[in-house]
Length: 235
Length: 282
Image (cartoon, rainbow over all chains, first blue to last red; front, side, top):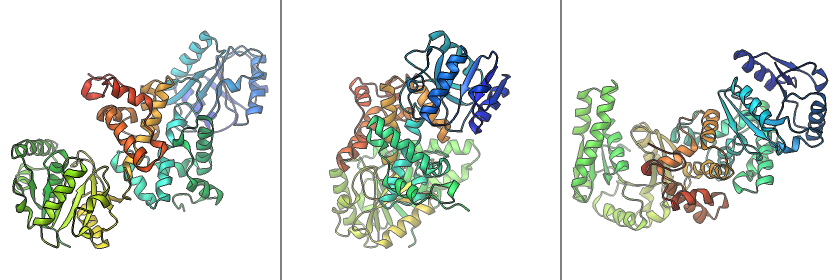
């Protein structure tokens, strides 16, 4: 039995992926809903660090079951602060809400028990095509590589290249079906900016320095598909 | 402007491919090279490429015969004199290209357009070889040319609007998707492509499994090949060279080559061709 805490799209998708592979999984609204025995608890409750630390600490107090905390731009270790017993806590990272069941990242903390880690790995492998075991680095694999083209694409647009030409260069020069500026619009330019800013601040690597154009678009409320306009116009 | 006859300087992979796609849509082509022995090799590559299309049912043998009949070869550059457009596609060396472009302008007519096919060199600089740089611009075809749809079209400072429009029309006629690129190091595609490769190298240095990086990349982008596999296909030296040229040419620190890639080069792990790079290759 897998408990998934957090009533949101990703939780539903995780539940579906588990169910599709014959695993029993339930979605619950909060930590207080956890009752009885289970094999794994996935804590998937938003981005507020302090709130999540409190939830992790409460869960760790309440159960000895393995706890997998979803993270995106945090360190796995940051989630365990305040927990009395950190040995049964790991972190997982998905591609935002995409490719759930196809790819997931698993990260241990300084304190994760090896047996717990192996058990979580086994469970994740049973309903994900690929489980990437990733060291505790900011952004994991996904966030570090996902928006590099979008960022540089925005720089090129600032230099006078058209949005369509940037996307066509990737689509027809690399045979990539999802062009970078279209992806950025779909994910949301505010989210892309948040990701790039966090990576640049934490790693110092210049490739993540956000394009001024993305900042301008966000400031103008042009957030991509969800607002009707970003790099592209949407009806 | 109507094109009938296309001249191609150089019979390597790029020159041969450009000649092939031109002949496939009905243009007469004449390929020039200093070395006659190169013709047989190029003709063999083109024949093999077209035979594959016949085997797949895309081309008929009669069509292949017609296409090959439209392609001629010469070691005398004067035989390019009646071409409507000449595409220089020799080795990526500034001095050699400047010299070839001068020779081309001496033999072609005044209305002939001249292009340089390059992935890295400044088009404005190359244009200085010519008396009339307004009829000159850059192209960047992707390998293999008959397969890859993209061509970057790069006007130099002196390129006229008429020249750009005519070359864009020609690119469309040979069934390519053209994009207009600025005359800066790496144009568009090469400023994008090496960034995930360089940051992928940072992840490798941090202990991440390269197979996971490529899997993540391919899945999210719906890409046929992983970004690190591309490094191994060309060799880390190619990636380092591309990064270095932009890093130095534009003084852009985003392109500083990662030490992991430099280590691969130092160790001679150049990917597919040496059997080992980021991955092991059989």
